[in-house]
Length: 289
Ligand code: G3H
Ligand code: ZN
View (cartoon, rainbow, N blue to C red):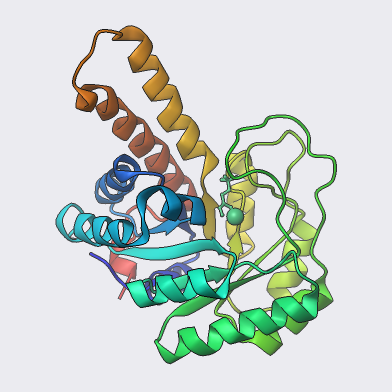
């Protein structure tokens, strides 16, 4: 069932686990996340990036996610979220389309401009009971590629800027650069000392971006330190592509696309299930009210 993201995050916060925010790329991955949520008895966030919107269209995505949530995952709570929205227009379209949470990512702008744009989004979103995620200190890396190479620099967000940003914008959740990166990179990490001071000073839920490529032990430690949402994109794309390439190579004469795509659903479902167990959200449906 489709629910407001607030219900999911409150359950996670109260009970000390994290909700996976899973980037979807197509119908198969929406189905995979929903099926994993049912199997695990886990709440889940389905999130869409601007590139997913360009690929599938905003209305189709909204309808597919709500229909799948209603029919495939009737008894588990699922929320729909915009990931890394770069403009007021994109965010506004998603709010109008029925999203209960939007991420305005103006983190590449100077802080005062980031604050101004985020404030405009918060005003419009809160008037419609929609949650807003803000971002400070741009999270680097690639959304589209699985690069195992080292990134030259992984800049960190500044604590005083995060505090000022949260106070002035009144965002509901906060993302900040704490050492992770988008994609899978040899030198990405979690700077736990920074996460600790952020959690001490900033009381709204913290969103960990770049969840792929971080060891299970570090993910567990981050959840213990109070992370409530973990974004996972690349690991799911890799699972999808590996499965598709494998089945295509073995079945070069296949003429029914469904026979090629079914293994991709199973592969993404397995990857999502693993994350739900790791994040501690499996078996937690009852904690959502
Ligand atoms: O916003 C999306 C995420 O931060 C995904 O990062 O591709 O490294 O898992 P990832
Ligand atoms: Zn991200």
